[in-house]
Image (cartoon, rainbow, N blue to C red; front, side, top):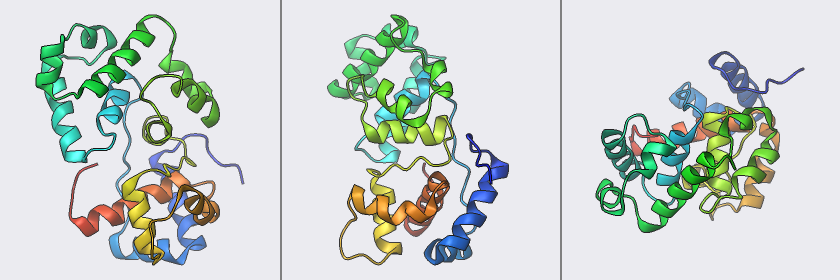
Length: 213
């Protein structure tokens, strides 16, 4: 079988069929909660900014800041972002650290050091190498961008708290699984680990009755 390079709504269903046949725990989630939303975002600067805002905070908090940013500049481009001064960006809700990360990203794009459009032609590890050169972008940010913006079917955000907690509950573990343990658990989900992540997020959010993603 030839596996797709890009996740679409059509092959998303193929991924779910594969996962539910491979893993009884995921099959049970699917039976209880149904098909998860097809969570995707447009690739580009604004999506990377949104993911940076989501680092180590609640989705609700990050969404509020991103909404204020959308109200302040439209569209969200590197050029317009850099026109915001320290007072304006603080009022929007950026921390000092995330202001630095976002400005570094914007400056790198404007200087031609980073071409986000070229990432679609790279494999996952090449994307990781390129993005992690930037201050403030680590594995979690790359994994979320790979999965939601570049729509890579086998991306697995091992450091995502929602995913970690969902796996702990579904697999009935006494402790939060480490990245290494998640890799081992997720081996049978290949090459659809991103679809498994959507399903586990769906379970986690449904249990918490939260609509945010």
